Amino acid sequence: MKLRDRREIVGFLVPAVIVLVITAGIRMGWARSNDAKRANELLAVDRERGEVSFFAVVHPGAMDRPLGVKGHHAVVFKEGRAATWALFRSEVSDLEVRRALEKLGAKAGENLTAESWTARKDRTRRDADLVVDGTPIEAFVAWGDKRVPLESLITEAQSPSATLDLRYGGNERFRETFRSGCIICLYSCPGGAIGNRAYTIRDYVRDGVIFHAQQKQLPRAGTRVQIILKPKLEAE
Picture 1 (tube, rainbow, N blue to C red):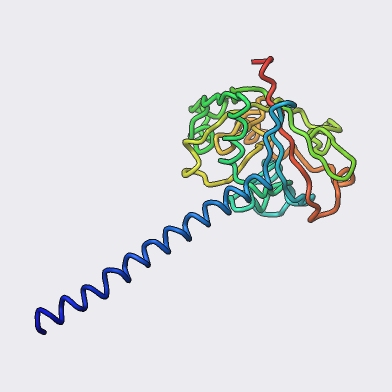
Picture 2 (picture 1 turned 30 degrees about the horizontal axis):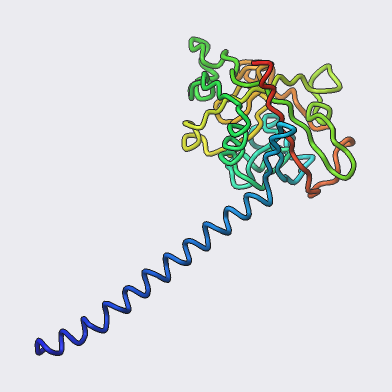
C-alpha cells in the first residue's frame, strides 16, 4: 500500500472514531441524566419534615417462604439477593437510601462485623451478640389514605406487633460481601443499612423465626406503597 493511500485511510478513520467517541459520551450523559431523574421520581428527601420516602412493592407471604432466611428482611432493594424473602421490595437501592438518610444528618453506627453473621453459629465468637448502633430511625408504610408504623404490620412471638428499635447501622463496607440489598433488617445484621437493636443475630440462631407479616393488615400482594424513614436526630 502506498503512503498516500495510507494517509487517505487514516484521514477517513480518525474523524469517524472521533464521532463515535462523542456519540458514546452523549449517550452516557443521557443515561446518567435518566438515572438521576428516575431516582428523583422514586425517592424523596423532605428536609422540612426530616423524612426520606421511596416506593416499594408489598409481598405479604415473602417472609414465610419455605426456603431461605425467614422472618428476617423487612425492606430490600428489588435487585438484592435477599429480595425474595423481603416483605417490601424497594424500587431504589440500599445505597441510594443510605445517601438520602445522610443528607438529613443520620450517622452510621458501623459497629457490626461481617462475622456478626458469618460466625453466628460459633458460640466462642461474640460478634453475633453485638447490637447495631447509629442514629435511631422511625419507619412508616403508606398506601391510599393510610400511614402506619412498620411494627404494626409485623408480629413476633407472644406479641401482636414487632419490637423494633431501628438504627442506621450503615454497613456500606459489607455491600459487596453480602449483596443482599437489605435496607431494613429485623435483627442487628451487618447485611442491612438499617438494623433492629432489639434483637441480635444470636437471638435469631437461638430462637429461630419470630417475625411474621400481619397479612390481614397489609394491602394485597403487588400493591405499591411508600416506605418513609425519619431519623430521630435529637435522640442520638
